[in-house]
Image 1 (spheres, rainbow, N blue to C red):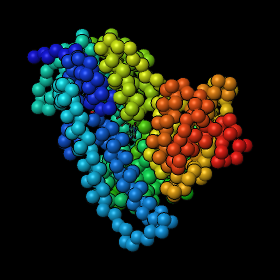
Image 2: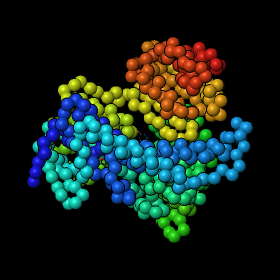
Image 3: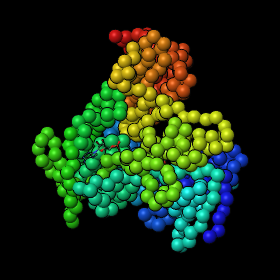
Image 4: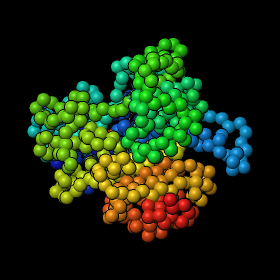
Length: 476
Ligand code: FAD
Ligand code: AMP
């Protein structure tokens, strides 16, 4: 068996793996990146979950469906009457696919120009930093490396009581591919992905019911923000049933019967399609030979320290396959950190300032701690809030629902968390992330000039409000 030698072998070319490979190559190391992604149609593209069936295609459909929905619901308020708005779902899907194709091809070009050797195939870590690659045609060869970076990502969790059939009961990837808008759509799990996908099809005309086992809506989101968002989603027509635990689903010729329990009662729901979005699990299938010696935790994640070192020296793991939020940018920062550590530089990830975004309308975005977390830590804190209803730009956009909430330490004024539900929250949060990265105080935000009229003024006013000095709101 032939053996190629590299300084670094990265397994997985998703948003954690490919940046690790590119950064390591930028730092002068010889790098191979092995990836086995295969789409349902058999095509092979780099970029992992994020580019092929995750962040990018979901945001493409969210944007298209929102435009369609706003045409129907908002244009009249602007004094624009539109007759005969109709949906060409095929064109919408083709646009999405075009974006995915462009971006995945872009990753190939980026790896190439950085000098990374991209290898199609399934990687398996043997002992002594060797990676066996099984190719498409049954061929196999071994790569020898100084360092190995495992970035194999995650995959949807399947409920044994509601197994995927690829037709009527689908995972998040299947839900991005519908060729018709289902009249009645069921979604199991009102988490981030369930809400985004439910929003897409709801805006395009489906009657959407989300069944969520927990009594609390979005428990990881600040309670005040989650409450506001729930109210808005329900007003939009999303039927979100909390405390509804799915016990089974059966597909038949004309739909899916979903059984669930709520308030101690057994209930049923009849839908045309069912999306199961109950979370994701780490992918380590066929990844670790017994002699590899890499430890997993009790949930199957590869065990790592703060610097993404596994239990084996010079074997690292990053992204969804390790602890922490399953977010593309978290994996990217870990991948880049590991490349720099391998090259002998100092590097770290600030796990306290990871932004999270839910791309619903309104969007939800946050960074740092929720009020409940700050309270649980026993910190003395102050809160400033500002509603978008008092923001001129939000009014002009006809999107004046929601609020910004800033939480700061009372004595030292350090920003501990910032939470937004409202227009472009996912873009606005960047200011708060930067502020927290530099350990900014509420006063720093107060003293920063914000352009008028912009949505960013709501962040400014929330910071001012923490010290009861907001200009455009009552300081209670
Ligand atoms: P992945 O992207 O899963 O990539 C892993 C790659 O490794 C894959 O290509 C896989 O085929 C390959 N691989 C696995 N095992 C092997 C092996 N043994 N040999 C070779 N190759 C292997 N995150 C956000 O931050 N923002 C969003 O808006 C967002 N939206 C999402 C929407 C949806 C519908 C979904 C499903 C996810 C979304 N995510 C979002 C999450 C995001 O996609 C993941 O956090 C991210 O893709 C994880 O990156 P990764 O590189 O760790 O893994
Ligand atoms: P997330 O982890 O953000 O992807 O969200 C997944 C959601 O699915 C969580 O809120 C879970 O509580 C929910 N969930 C898991 N299993 C079930 C089930 N059997 N019935 C309803 N909801 C579920």
